[in-house]
Image (cartoon, rainbow, N blue to C red):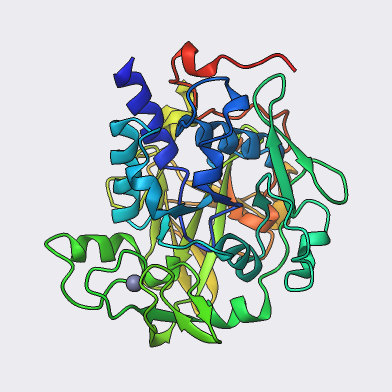
Length: 382
Ligand SMILES: [Zn+2]
């Protein structure tokens, strides 16, 4: 049982991040873990985060949807969590996957404002609409409540159940155009301030500046939300492009391309940061698609695809599924990807810019809770 739970927590770990290009909603972890009515279980449970992530995935009709979690520091020693859960949250904190704060205050709303993300919360935020006008827009604040097949969302304002993203606020756009350094040694969010222990360099490779969270504004000064320190400006943030993988008509995951880091996509790329498709492929697709099938690069804002496979791939200009339109891409051949173009590794396995790729089949998401023991999944009848 405990083993299964830790597998679920590992799966959830893949769905928490502070990367502004990937996070799809903001949550306050201290709030989520106490939504006891979601499963009728313990007073606090980290598995509820998984249930809420699944609900978000169902609503957005996409797999592998990550959330931006704000974590009150008190939660790291919350006796209502199991020691295993506390350990997991500490690990997320150390790896900079979540934002740990002494006093979260309005940070959840600030992040939502800067990044233009919806908020998943049962708090009503009455009277804050002056400071955050988008609070009044449909889909920007949704409360996860118990439903027949897991949590569903209800809106405090404007009706609807679908989370809506806005655009980054002007302040957010400005902050996210730069990269930042925290003077605190080993800062997990804005590292590079010196020190940081043996794994600091490793962590830095994993967390490219492009994926840095938005700083907090203290009296207009960009500051570290964790340490309160004024952040140093470390130059322009590298440009990014967000790509999405669609398999069998469903968007399975998104990934970020930066000008410094090409990304390999295939059945099972060896390189770190590679996008592994194996788990979503049927036997025929698995035989056809190479371990490293295509490489994506971002050069001066243009996405370039290079076939690195044995069998070749193709490009569908403007996303056209008409066979005569398909442009073959032979092994080792490169091509600049047009705005709506899709790279096709195999029929039904496509990659393109995230804003141009949507799910077009009936959606049944891969649950992060798939490994959860039945005890944790005891859902109340609506
Ligand atoms: Zn810091």
